[in-house]
Amino acid sequence: MFGSDRMLLESAIGLLGTGARVVVALPSRGLLDRELRAVGAEVVVIPMLVLRKALLKPRGLSTLFRDMFRGLGAAWRLISRLRPDAVYVSTIILPQWPLVSRLRGVRTVSHVHEAEASGRKFVNRILYSPHLASHRTLVNSRFALETIHTALPRLADRAHVVYNGVASPDSPIPPRAQLDGPLRVLYVGRLSPRKGPDLVIDAASLLHDAGRSVEVTLLGAAFEGYEWFEEQLRQQAVVNGVPVNFAGFHSDVWPFLAEADVLVVPSRVDEPFGNTAVEGVLALRPVIASDSSGLREAASGYSTSKLVPADDAGAIAEALTSLADGWNLVVADASKNRAEALRRHSPGMYREQIAQAVLG
Image (cartoon, rainbow, N blue to C red; front, side):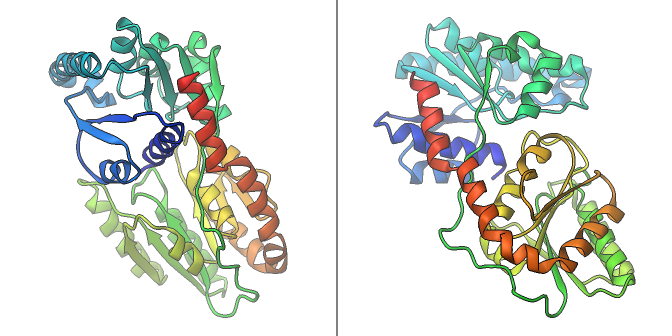
């Protein structure tokens, strides 16, 4: 599940904790559906417009209007049947829900998890505009708030930041006391050019050339249609002589973090936040992240986190070398950094804030 999916699950848990009946409308079945039902939420699958940028192009308009009318009718009928006290919209790409809910006189809260400051201002304004209909707007980072303000100041002026709650094991395995053998580097995320897993392989190659042994694990899978990129990564690893474990997708990241020495989050593009970076700190592991967008907020303020310029394998290699050379500091400060991450991103605190925002 993506970060916004995990936060929807946490939000549902928070609302269920108040004794509320929680019904979640989804456009399709899948892992999120199963997880929601496991915690006690009811799930209904109905037609709805899922607003993608491709639909805003001329060739996508027919699909946009078809899904829009189907979605409006389905949302109207569901609200008529359930008569909810509040509607919580967990993403900006479901634009019909704030509008229908407001027309039905239902308290509506939008939660924005998406922010691309590098995107076109006009497109961002279209994506954010439907959420002006909500009574309240939540965002997951200051970066997201600034991005909204650039595109639609009216929405930003009434938005509030609620940092993501990130779960973790109660007793994560401490980092190795000594770096005996290869440095174990972990990447977690989609195998996509935007996310930059190729940069991790390039950085490992630079360390290998400098005489330092490195092993890389790529935890994630390619989207359908991006199989070519995974094959390119495999060829890159062979050419560079870097041992790379293509672990595939696993919903449980903690065993892989336990086996790793360092987590790298090398995204080339804007990220509204960076749950993966926080998970690294919570797992007692040092983190190297791109010094951009919401990743800066997620990874800053920890002595064992290093921010590097985006799209710069050389900078990642330098950060890996610095962490390895100062490993005693990593071992000494890991618990202190975890405690700070727990304070900032407690799931319990997140759930309480969401419940209060939605139920008033």
